[in-house]
Length: 159
Length: 146
Image (tube, rainbow over all chains, first blue to last red; front, side):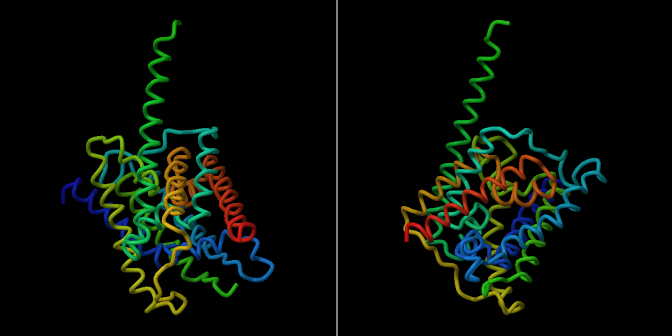
């Protein structure tokens, strides 16, 4: 099998397994997600800690799995491991995460479960996914242009 | 805690971790949904198809998990998820999630699973912040406004 084919088959299969995991864990149910975030329900026993176990299970596997690159020169079906080029804790990370949390709390949806729910409740989740993608892309284009302008300005500045 | 489902939550989490491991070992990519979806634009050659295939796999997997899951685990209900929001509320929340994950470079999968597993200080910070604002938001919506 050509590497390009394996690369794309892997992407699709990984997405399917990810989606099965979300459904088994019921993270596709926004009410269950909000039941985790509802810490005020702890005293009367209504709190649902399940989401912490989902993250815990994923992190435990990832602690090993996401370190396997140390044993490999390159990925099985790609040229190189693509790592985040961002480092350090900046205002963008804090502001973005804060805004995301508000949207997550309001709806009970983060990006993965919202896209996965297109298979279960497409009519109701569709509008959320469209708004999320449009906003994400618009923000990405804005950031891309801003960074480009800053680069240009830095080069134009007298040394 | 009558809704607490630790068994299926852990098994689901392990499957998510395996999916992320597979994407990393084979493709050298991080299974962060917001980054996979959000960086489709601006378009770059050779970077679109695998993202679309991964994202298309999510609803397929959700359908499989929701049909097979209840047959294996009694704690998984067969009912479909319900939304607690009006369409306008969904649009507002969708915009906040889209803008926030793009600015913050990650969501519950990228920062919350992959970033924590890599022990990234950025991801620990991001998870702390979005958990905090989400908890405050749910508190206001469920216990203050209503």
